[in-house]
Every structure is written in C-alpha cells, then in structure tokens.
Length: 126
Image (cartoon, rainbow, N blue to C red):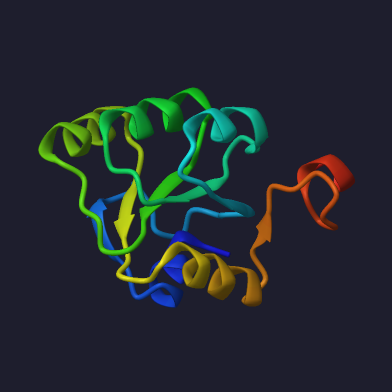
C-alpha cells in the first residue's frame, strides 16, 4: 500500500509532505504508548497515534517509522511539525478514531506489526 492510498482510505490531510506519496507502506501500528512503539513496532512502519507532542516525533525517528498519522483530528503543535520537517517524517491527520482508522487500513490489506501475524516481518522476513 502506498502513502497516497493511506491518505485516501483515511480521508487524511497531509501536514508534512513526504518526498513521494508513492512511498510503500508494508505494515502499521496503532499506539499511544511510546515505550510500546519502541518495543513492538517494526522499522519502516506507519504509526497511527493520538499523541501529538515532540516525543512522538523523536520516538518515530528512533524507531525508524516511515510516517505518522494523527487520529481523532488531533493536530501537532508547531514545534512537532518543525521537528518532523527537519527529520523528514511525513505527518498525516485524520478525523477517524484510532480503532476505525486501523480497521480500515487492515481491511484494505495493510498488515500489523504483530510477530505472529501472517505477512509480518518476523514471519516472512520482510
């Protein structure tokens, strides 16, 4: 799935544009606890979250997250946007709640970061 498709499925707006909306997204994680992001996400995942502070951007950088989607219409502040721009981390915003946003992406074929889920990194080596 491409970032463009994610944008369309979630009816999201782009806050910090990626270099290319055709960037391939292979898996996603929905999480508000940044320690869980660091412990359980796979590199180059899409992160859906309701948190909008600087820690989210820093965590995304540390975890090598490909892009962030803020759910529930929550908007990051200027500092977070500036840091994402500096780190080249695309930011999107959707009005959908996390459960529905994750469900829509999963229903369209985007896999989660679960180690037991078929098609995830741990199972097929991607």
